[in-house]
Image 1 (cartoon, rainbow, N blue to C red):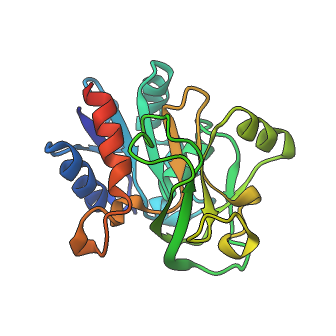
Image 2 (spheres, rainbow, N blue to C red):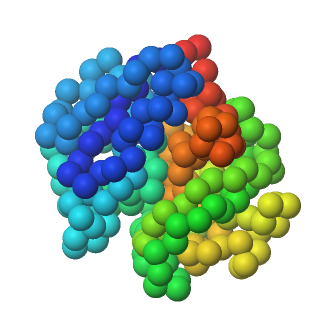
Length: 230
C-alpha cells in the first residue's frame, strides 16, 4: 500500500499522519508538496490537518485551488482513496469532493479537547477494523468544524449511508451535549458516494500508540492499509 500526504503552506499535522500510516503499513508515506501534480503509483492520498494558507478567506478555500487538487480530483474519479482530516476535510468540501461546508464552531471558540465518535457503519475500507455502533475517543483541534449542509443533502447522506462518524457520548448516545461544535445531526465525518473519499474533523492519527495516550484511532489506519494491501 502506497500512501502520499499532501503538504500545503500552514499544514502542521503531516508528521502525525505519517507516523500513523507507517505504524499501520510499515512503509513511510510520500510527502507531496502542493505544487506537485504527479500522484502516480499512490493508493491513498491524505490531506492532513493544520491551517493551510493561515486559514485566510475561508478554511481550505485557498488550498482547494492549489495545483495538486486537480490531480486529487482525478485520483478520486479513478476510484482512488482520499482521506481528509480536519483542515483536510475543509479542503475536500471546498474542492467539491465532499458535500457541505465547515462553519465556525457554534460557540465561536477554538476547541482543543478529546471527543467521542460513534462508527455509523463498519463495512467500509476505513472502518472495517471497528464494529458498527462502536465508540472511540479522538482529539479535536479546530475553530471551524461545524458541519453544515442543506436538509436535502443531509437526508441523502443519511439515506445512502454516507455518514461515517457522529459525535457521541462515551456510551454512544447522539445528543446535543456531545456535539461541541454544533455540527448538524452530530455529523463528524462523511463519505463520498463510492465510500472511497472520507473527510472527518477529529484527529484519529493522534491516538495510534500507547505513548500518545491510547490507540483508539489505530483501527482506522489498520483498516485502510489492510483494504488496499489486499
